[in-house]
Length: 82
Image (cartoon, rainbow, N blue to C red; front, top):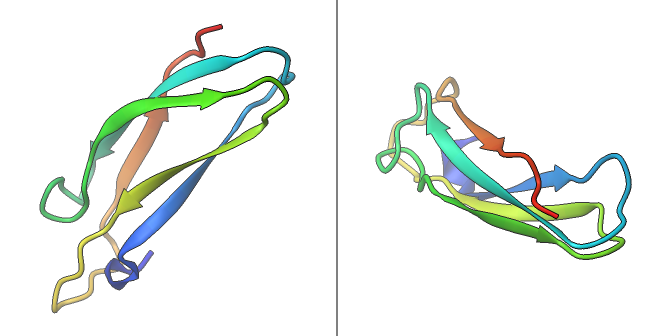
């Protein structure tokens, strides 16, 4: 994504059924993009209600005068809690 985008919505999909409420921890990790210089890193908990299969997390990307297209970060999630 371009650094000038300002933010990105990260979609997380629930697989293997949608019965019951669950929560899952998430976090960002630096690669070549570094938090807090390039993006607002963080961690949190996504909650899926019974029947929900998609959820969104907002990631803020910082805009600099020089646009770089090769900065990277990654997003992980833990095992869900039922």
